[in-house]
Amino acid sequence: MKELFQHAATTHGITVRVAVNFLPEQSQPEAGKWFWVYHIRLENHSHERVQLISRHWRITDGRGMVAHVDGEGVVGEQPVLMPGQSHDYVSGCPLETQHGSMEGFYTFHAEDGSPLEVRIPFFPLAAPATAD
Image (cartoon, rainbow, N blue to C red; front, side, top):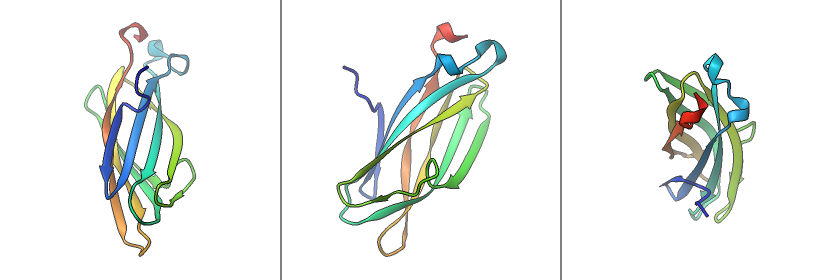
């Protein structure tokens, strides 16, 4: 069985795992629209409580066009993770090209309020050749 999470990065004791899948049923290649869903797991391997405050995404399409997306929390939440806890969420990304990539970082706050920048690993967005 293939590993659910294909990409991972750990920063400040917080691991970000990513699984990404192309969704043909949400895509319209003939209209220049492709759609991926990604599942993120945040794992707190540090020794303190942390809270996710914001996200920053760098989304690159197949033409090299870059979009920066910033926002509070993830899917409307700012989860608090105690040591040893994890938080999962699912979101999606539309593109006007058959391939691209995503990467970025989350800003967490440590117990003392100090910010922690936690890397989101680079992951490719690639539709199968049959999806064009």
